[in-house]
Length: 452
Image (cartoon, rainbow, N blue to C red; front, side):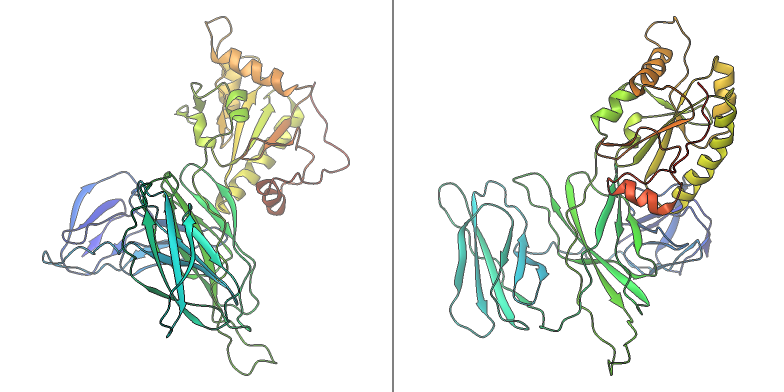
């Protein structure tokens, strides 16, 4: 039985829901039944992992999922109605990171808890040692431990009336060996309204990489944390986008190289430990400086087909505000180059968006010119009709201090202005990564001709 692209697949017992949007999916027989047809988009319930710098895309939906050459192939296992739902793990401490002489521990916040106590003992010892009984956060790093040694850990919480809970279940953790191999921590390159981009340095000789993730609720007083779990077990590149992040959670990621070919000095393959965790990543809001430049949240942006998009869709992205006009010859030369670059960055998975601010003389010219662009625009509006889009557009041109066009003002997702006019900047992937890191790129010595 084959399911066409865009059909919702549901398993009766396992609460598995996915929406296929890239290609036909081969589905094994079992208790899997087709449901109603949806538009081609991914279900928000499906954790999606894109391979940013390659052609692969994989989605982990509980059972075996593989992607190859741009086609999504799902291998789903049927179940039966007698399957029991998985139990929630018991509350307790989890290993966040292990080093040669230290362990970093984490646990979920307990509602109304004022402090926590963490106790530790070396495996095989009888006596527990209290690391602290005055911990107000949900993470602790214990240093000065023996390398390559196992330790047991337990934690308990107390309310303001000093009533302590029972200790959690004991977990066992191991410090790394002195000669353990590790990558550097992966970097969070960008965060937007529902996703983030993770990037790491390549390990020579590595066949692929395993990505793991754990999350914790951001708000104080409230539960919701997880242990490390696989996100993808075979990433061939060095950059991925993780979609469908929950706004109330902070996420950490770690990477392990797989199949590393030994060097001439090494007699056998080296086992690598997981990298240190990334910084906490989450969803980002739009910077106020960008929002107000574009007229505030109440001003809709126009897409090339004439539809509207919220200005808040720019959250977490490098934003280029492109001032241009159809009557300007240098603009008409630069716009195709910028459009080619824009499409390249989209294909590479970089969070980049452009907003066209028109200096055209009439709405018909604006609409025709914007129709040749793949990005968003401030609506042109008509002068003299109330508080119109025309006023917002003209105010944006004034705030940018436009003296000549084409002009491309580039903003970091934080709202920091990186270039007043990036037209002289080379349109390359390394420069985009500089922008994502909050750094301006080098400009060519001779800027192009401008229309005044």
